[in-house]
Length: 467
Ligand code: KG4
Ligand code: ZN
Image (cartoon, rainbow, N blue to C red; front, side):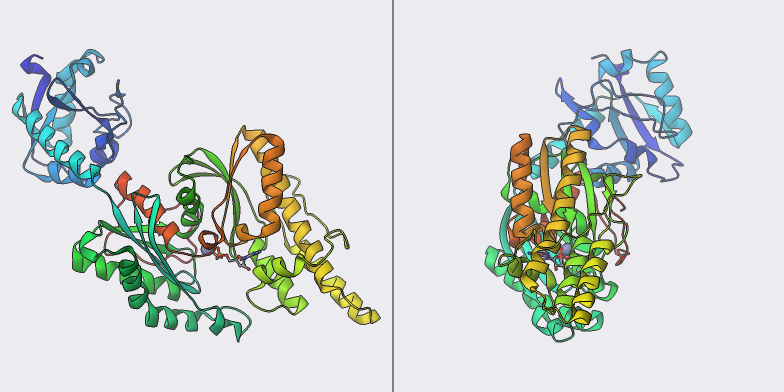
């Protein structure tokens, strides 16, 4: 390597927009010839043009914080790979000019810088080899939960304090009561999670917490707790999307499962059909136009007099009923074959009950529950299979509270078998709200370099894919 292949950069009037860092994570660093090579994979000036990394070295994880702290120092050392230079007409001088425009004055050529960068990153890689323990916290609805997760896949503890018994009295979740109970229980739940995992906060590498979507008051309890621990212990804070957590529950018991795959997300507040393109990256194919699947289960359960929480009760009662006793409508959305609508079937059930009451007919509740459940499950399975075929997906997963439904699990398994697809589903305990799934999702964000600040807030209507 000749001396001209190295530049030494001094930061002068950089505006600290960090565009350069965002576009040059450590994933573009390579080691060879005893040197560390930072290879820009996008323009450090405008963020778009300038260079395309010739050897996008993906095998080193992004560590944006580390790069940021290096760049924030007065002098920044960058080494360029020889092959990099040969790719560009104007070569190194063009690179230097752009850097100068960005505010880095006095680019000097040096090989010393490369060695410094190499040492820093070798240290980071050593750290990466250690086990990563995440403390996950979940409080978005009526479960106060904490969990310790190792390396994103191994659950060391999973403590869930459910408020079902309290809310049962009111026929549904009362937000104020939920918040108050989270406050009363959260410290104890976290301590139990640490004890069960046989660790202390000293062993934890980062705190992951659900910050949306959910009930704002309930979310705030977890977020405030996570921030307090992270601040007191000087630990990184990673905010997690609740639904991303549900999807990530699939990684716990399926070590072979990696994106891309198709996932049907069915919970109390959400019904989405998505392609999980990468960890934390989703393409939404379909969603519900009205009620979520779980919501329909809960409303129908209430109408039949089963009470709260409805889903598991409908599931149980259905086992005694005939799913073909009553034919309920299965909505199809003309312009989007992957979208769902459950308000029609819910209304049909209510009309059926009203009609029976008016005519004095006796209702067979088990048949009613089983027939309703069949109508919902058939649509969920049909849409998922259609999307799998259209998008050429062969790995199918389900997630969310309704994913613990016995009929859905069996029907999806059968359909996947028929089509030769691999089927993945979390155990029921990881389908309904828990913090293990939050710890898993937080792990994958953590190793990507995602960090939240002390301004992290609860976002009750956080959309999937939003940060
Ligand atoms: O994912 P989850 O625990 O909370 C949300 O994020 O919404 O989902 C709760 C929903 C509730 O509507 C509940 O009735 C439903 O999941 N659910 C079920 C079953 N278990 C829970 N629905 C049908 N069958 C079940 N076995
Ligand atoms: Zn949930």
